[in-house]
Length: 269
Image (cartoon, rainbow, N blue to C red):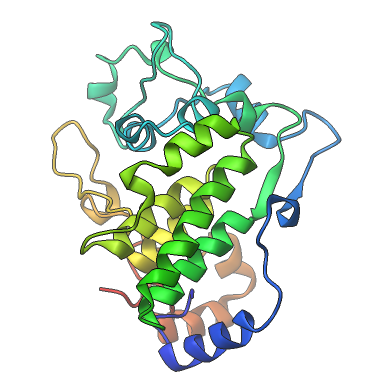
């Protein structure tokens, strides 16, 4: 699915091949690791060390409106006993008026020493299957089935109580109805990938979902991309210094060494 917009023929053929093989379907199939040395899960260092981090408003706002039970898993309560986050990209000047210490921290389920680091999960696989069923097979019923499986499996991954899962699965957000089905899949994939934010960024670049607003407010830094989400990492000065010939060949083939230059598979305009 990663190459869907770069080479649809190869993408379709590979998806068809994969669908004929056993796939990850249950949380027992999740690929994960647990750090056993030092401070364990590296998110623990981020949560307890300096500089401290706070959860994003962008993530938090996607959860309460649908009564998503993953809110209390992903996000710790703030000083007032609720859930509040920081706005991404806030300027230094605007930051001065924000009570940073009062905002929500990461939930312990994703940031304790013993937290698993997920590499790929059954929930992600179900949602990729939902996308494939929708856009390649034009099978909305299968897409709906896989979509619901993806959400349910994500909830089980985080050990949500069965009664809460049953209640949430009755909500409209799990039904995959309407004209924006790919966006609905994208929003749920974003949540299913927590806390693998690098993979989330990759998925957002490929599909455009969830939609990342262009930064236009004076309180937000527009950076080197004039407020647009970065599309790649630059080649490092170390790479250029030790491997210049190949770096220059790649730049000529792929485009300028800028963070708003799309990578080769990022073809969805």
